[in-house]
Length: 432
Image (cartoon, rainbow, N blue to C red; front, top):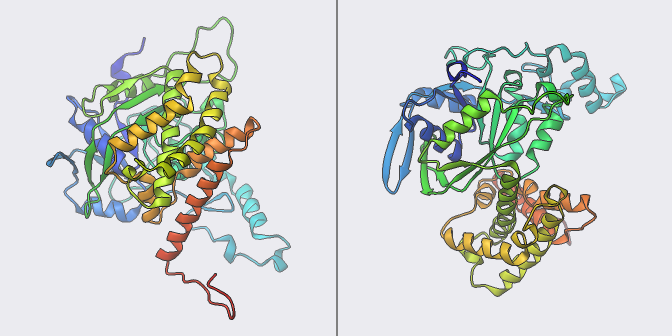
């Protein structure tokens, strides 16, 4: 039995988007709130925080509530070249000796340099030690190596690896990471690229957020709580590298239990815990809805309600859902569970999509907001997950693949426009 007094109470939040600010504000609203540290990923954002009144503002139904008492840290993600981290101040491989001089290509130089400097890489940081994490000194906010026990991750799925790389050395087997993100397949990527060792891997918790929130214009630390929803949480079983038959099942880590209790006692977040198998099914339901509404609203450049009462779009939704339903019902991790065929039938998934589109008909999907802002979308962790799992089982999800590629192409098109690129006119040809 663990003594609750020995559990570090500080909660770190990595990702200060709408969801991150909403969660941070909700935690500071609790009676006897835990210390909350915001981990900022840009120096300019850190400077703006220091110049502000150091509060987070949440607008709900026209009412504003400000909360202070937050600590901040700066953790700038490492620069990466050819899939290798580049140490701060190190020379770019593009400015190294040419291939003619060295006989090796730039990516080979990057790999060689990475191997020769492995004693300074993030994989060989000082060992994880238990101590309470505190605020960072303002004069050098990015040099802290204090361990992180309770981490809530709210960055976009494509930024997960980059964001965690900057604090990887501060996470250990007594840490818990709560992933509050859209999409699926993120944990597999984290285990493959960051936490390959089972013995030193942190504990994982996943959450499904149905709250509607968006940024306040002109306020980096303000958020509008536009739609009240829920937060479904689930602790994932920790895999043991070499379990012994006489040893009892591994209990949840103290940090996992603390973080779960802390989030579920927030009336604003309306959080509840679920068993891993039930959470997986809830994730797949949300994935199915997101794989229809988000890409279609991007391609239509319209609000969610535009998908309603339009039979041509209904036909497109049904083509997407036919593939999504078949993939989900065939997943090996759902084999043997009751009611899977009915729960994930195309008809029920269509009912869910129409219900969500109607309830949020005036909203702009997060994917459309990303495309309009020229940011990379999460489509490869939503539609891409369906396509990838289908291929594993011998299915070709051509409709989902086509829609995913069109979203990626739309994002790249908007990005080029924002960068000022113009089409090239060639003699005797149309614009390319």
